[in-house]
Each structure stands twice: as C-alpha cells, then as structure tokens.
Length: 86
Ligand SMILES: [Zn+2]
Image 1: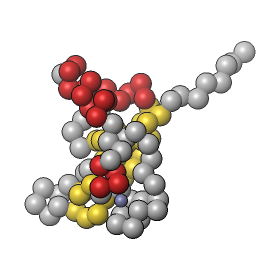
Image 2 (image 1 turned 45 degrees about the vertical axis):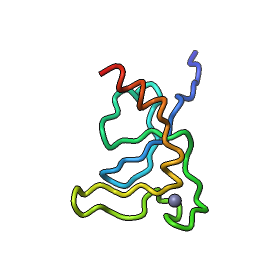
Image 3 (image 1 turned 120 degrees about the vertical axis):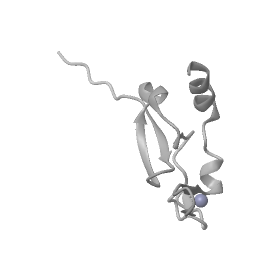
C-alpha cells in the first residue's frame, strides 16, 4: 500500500532566468547564488511587474532586477541558514 504524501515546496525566483518556480523544501540547501527562496508566491496584482517578479534586466551583469514586491517576499531565514552551512 502506498501512502501519498505531497512534498512541501517553496517558491523561488531565479535572477538569471527571471522565472518563478517551486523548489522542494528539502532541496533548498542546494540553491546557489541567483536563486532566491521566497516566503510566498508574489501577488499578481503588482502594477510594476504584473506578477513576473522583476522589472527589467540589468544589461551589465545580465541579472534580472527584482521588483520590490518580490523583494518583500525574500525568505532571509533560508538564505542565512544556507550561508551558515557553507
Ligand atoms: Zn512587483
């Protein structure tokens, strides 16, 4: 008998691809620079980024400029705990 368990996921934003995606919470320690874990999925009602999470692309380092609404959702707890492990 198989027990179905939904794996917990956390929303992340990739500053290199400009994409929002779900990452398995167990794999969050594998995130590297440019992959930003979020507390929650950004709301789609943002007038600046229309829910994309970024407002443009930095032509110097080719990294997406994160919108303020996404910036507010950044999960620093995960980032900090990742930094401790390194
Ligand atoms: Zn926004």
